[in-house]
Image (tube, rainbow, N blue to C red; front, side):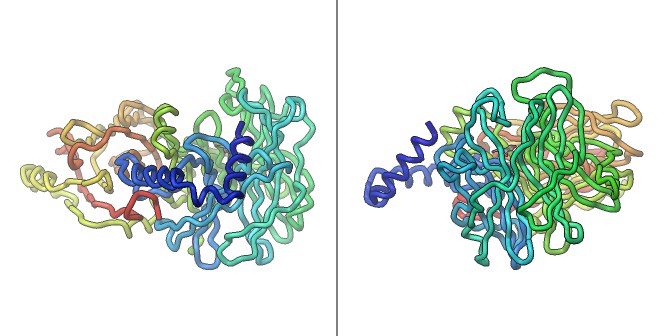
Length: 511
Ligand code: DQQ
């Protein structure tokens, strides 16, 4: 079905009909106008000019510019026919779209999709390794999720132009999947280099056992030797047709050194998991010591890169949480999370902050410094009345005292977003965001620090520099957003900053 559609588009394109057919340009124009006026469409987050996107792919700092590739369906605002879209940025915030970097090649091993992968600098040449998929019979398929039977292989492409606009695919895959009837998948490669060797990890798993990262080694990125699993996890015990839903398959693994430890990230059962621990340098096996959830909300298929200063930057896909019929009709789906800087917390857990580059978007501000006990609450209440965020495009930072803290943002129609933190026991607190509650670990908690970035239907929250919770809200704004605190919350408040944020493009089409 998808193939037929592509062939049809190629045929009419070749006949020159696309350019001269007035209905096509009229339709494109109205879709653009509709997207530019859609108040739910983000204005600060990277997303394609129209249609569907998912995972970040191969982010790389190359010749002074940040390049981001991402999973993209050029035909519709639903998942399918995966291409690698491409955007470039001077600062990881302001993006310019470039032509699609990778498209499936009919007849080849990536005929049904160029899935997720990574980009590296190999002896001065930009090189991507990605998963190619092609429909296969069930016995040859490695991806069997109930809807598709795909055989997954790892493919390589290189670019020699400075803007990475054009990519040359190697004709044959560089890696075939292991012959293993229990294998639950074989995709989403990541790489690291150590001396003359390249190491490649591939997301995988075993039926009724759990997710795995399979480790390979090479000197030239083309010829690979299988070593063993770098890391292994546990099955949830639930039966599911799609092994990703039951923790039997790990998608989008990533592995890197951080603060004297190693960090493993993987996506499974609808969440991204982080593990910090030690890499045994001889055995090349990862031993996790701590584990947590990277973001408790709408956040998946993470990927990291090093920025120009050597910081470990986290990217992720923010999916839609509304029904498919709604986002498909809207003409766009998904966006890229804003960059976050990762670090290792004092207790060995993963910590994160929004990348400082985001500050370049700040416009009008309202700052209420940390209060002295003698500041009359009437003054604070009056100052809070000045906080008005227009067009759902703003940033908030506030501190409130533990144990119980709550904050609400509201427009004329009532509460729009709210978060509460309250103790559960001595080592755990309950964090609730818009009615969804999760347990988060706490250590000697004194304060609740909230850092919030809101952009149309997306709210990214980082709480206490550790606990992230991304929310989607599909209610159109009714007037400016204001902050609302009860008298008891006001008594707990200990400083607040709010900024109106500037869009990254004038028309919500990103750039
Ligand atoms: N998305 C890609 C896969 C990956 C999944 C396909 C995770 O490579 O496993 O679009 O969202």
